[in-house]
Image (cartoon, rainbow, N blue to C red):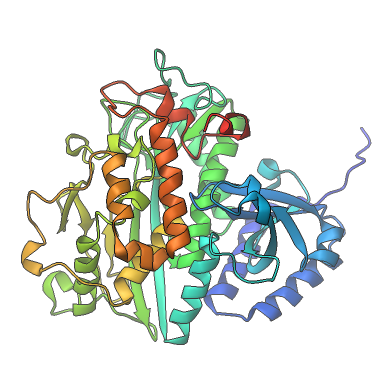
Length: 475
């Protein structure tokens, strides 16, 4: 049969080499103007490309993508616009025009079997019509803060461990019915999932695509609960790490959908089994030295490291709504299923919100375990870095392990704690602070206040990662 289309398809090993090179440019702080020139030249010279996918995230962390014709983007990359009033948490209708600036360091080549041939992807930075960074674009705010840290010799390294479930059927979340619930594709767990089951085949394809996108894979496996998965990859610069969370979930959903299934990142979609988390591992380096490590410190953690931990413990309830951003999140915070709701630090207690993994001068870090997989990664890391590095009060070390100090058990209390937090208002700015709380209250008010034992339809269909345009009028 005659092949009419001739769009670029790159083998996975070549994709990995290209994407690792792009990732290294960011790690080595290649200036933006040099990267822009490099990739514009590539777009101009590569005739087999048809489109560039430009993506960004809204205030809640919902992922948005626009495809621009390759030739159009070459000519108009500095004047891309979209309607911000169509994005929850962005501009109001009377000030709806927003612009997208290309963050050229995020340029990535895509697996054609998942995204289609002839496409590349890049993340956008949202700006207002006067070309100022838009406050609601938390990725852009994190980039600005990262640049400020870099000028002071500081650099954050982040690794996320994102768990999810694989369920039978396409769009299983949008079609959720409380009397039926979700259906596992596998009843196996950690050590009981056979190599050719749907879950393991999904994980294998997922890992291949993740490797091709330059994630630098470490390990992958089914998780404790039936039909649950986790794929781990190497720590990297903060913005890249957050971008990878968005790509991780996008890859999972796309690969699952290609196989008639749904990849689900609700924190607790099934009762009586473990929920899903998104553990955040964070360290801070100064002039290439890990500030978290001290061979003689308690737990080999430095004074800076302990001060960071104590400040996060002190403000755990303030940012609880950021780390646990949905009604469904508060089902997960159940210590009977290894969920961390105790505001304390430990090296081995899985109910503590902070764990101190064994580390050395390269790997010393802390792990925040109380994060749900539906949290906005940019908002989370932006908040945590400000708490760690800026001048915020810390908890008294004597209070690090008080048994009675717990996270909120429902979203209503978390919203109130967030609204009353001067630290959150200062870090996020008054507009983002009020917008975020208002959005979360809208969702909470349309979901069951008393969660009870059964998963309710409202907490699924009004979830920010599930809700689509057809449901927005219900808000």
